[in-house]
Length: 186
Image (cartoon, rainbow, N blue to C red; front, side, top):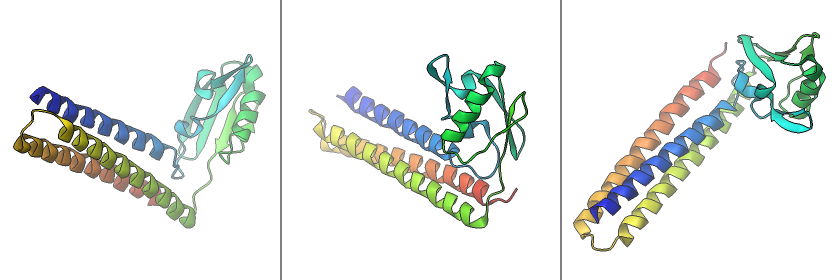
């Protein structure tokens, strides 16, 4: 019986960890004006008839804070990658120098920074909602546990709440860091 409650608590912790990981991944897609290879993560390239992730057919690097370079492993892919980046709707227009693609990241305006901060806050709210839903599921599972005393159930519900508070605080700390990153003019 106590084992069952421990498993519920452990499962809730794992699911909250997963929720935080998803939140962090969502934040990496919100660019703050600094170049990052992750900006091109969703780009798929036609490679011998098969859609393939860009990083599987080329080296994606950032020589400085405003530039991304894409050097394909096969020169024949240069135009295919160029086209894939253009149709990915990321707002980038690569320059082709015959060897590699060079993408200049424009500086972000103050209004755009505020907009990006709002987008990040929306992701934070989604993460918090997910964490609270996990708390609700765990508490319901605890209440459904047979042969558990009221005191024991209450004790585990308090542990779930403590876990929830810990993960919400972690999400808020990640958000504070991201907001600071977004609002900092490089």
